[in-house]
Length: 89
Image (cartoon, rainbow, N blue to C red; front, side, top):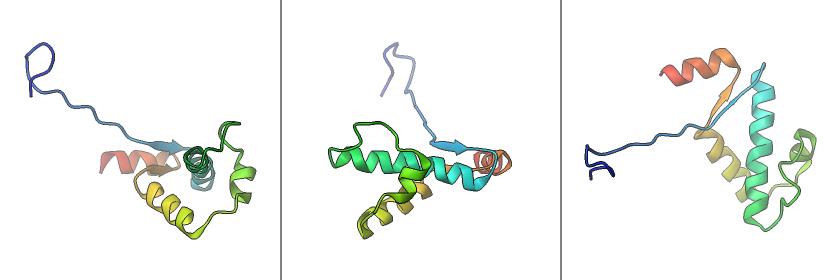
């Protein structure tokens, strides 16, 4: 379907990337963000994104653990070299 100007279709692509000095750091940061999303869906998380420590201590149900794993698979998570390689794939 043509865009507003009638020139042609428009496409928007987004990528969720968590990049830090180490892969472990980036996974911890991503987990905090994912946990916050889960909390918001439950009507919680009103204090913002939990710290890495808080996210690690959050008792997740089996379903929530599966959701975290599923969401991580849809993200690019890693150190700068890993992230670059994944983007270029």
